[in-house]
Image (cartoon, helix red, strand yellow):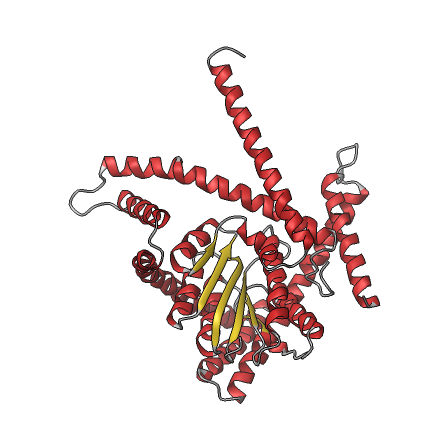
Length: 220
Length: 201
């Protein structure tokens, strides 16, 4: 392994253990933060600042990808033009709004409330169609007991949640919905979350011991 | 990837300073392994993310994998940030799935309900979809929409499935042991409560 690789592994493991130690021994006998606690807070603050800079780098990357699409006259290049114009306009408005230009502040808010919010809400509405279609396709693709239970449960939750025309709330359906949500679905969800928790633990340990190296270098 | 098509790995929106970082790490491990396996093809794989730091790490992962391969082709735009909110992220990934000659999509990381739009786009292109999320709502929609959904901790076992190293197999065994321990503790707890309720304890 090259020196750069060794150095990044050593730094990553050392900082990982320091943050972990800060969680375990972060409070001194007097109740205030211990040295390890202070180091942990400092490292996490630096990480947050770096994550902020990463957003700038990410946006630059987004620009390069879309400029490349326009240059190579790829399919959908017009959308890349719209994206770049929107990005520049929003950036300028946000920058001016930060320095309290009243018009810019109002336009910046309007851009969010009248463009981004309705578009994202529309995509959410589109999900209903996608999921309905996917449910029908599920029976064709994977016709087994689990798929049938999945669809019946989804249907019961749906009819138990929405009020019926002319009938309003049907008590038996809402009771059934509450029972499903509280017992079988709740138990299943907790089981899955326990599994996710265990997976998170082992993944964290692999990164901490340098077996998984998302920061480059050969995995162990 | 021998037919001139490419692989797309989407890493979700798990930030590195959030509790969802483990799913992002699992996704990066899988990306690394898949990149090593598919870099020999004409079209290198692409990776999309909804978190900027994750996008940078995906670029680094693809670069490292390309350096390890004989061909050594690295395209800096192969690791991309597509959007910072759930739906802008999905809206940015859909054109990649649609227009970039993708034959297989791997969605591995933190996804919410927006993952249904990605699986739907993949289905429209007749591409294979392998998907896993650490989010419960995301898992539910992926179960209905993805061709091959992974449920629960299977997300973290993906590295072991792809033969990413002995530590992955070992951590899978540790997960199994810990799961049995938790089951025993829960059953014992229930038994103690029952015995207390009937007045034996």
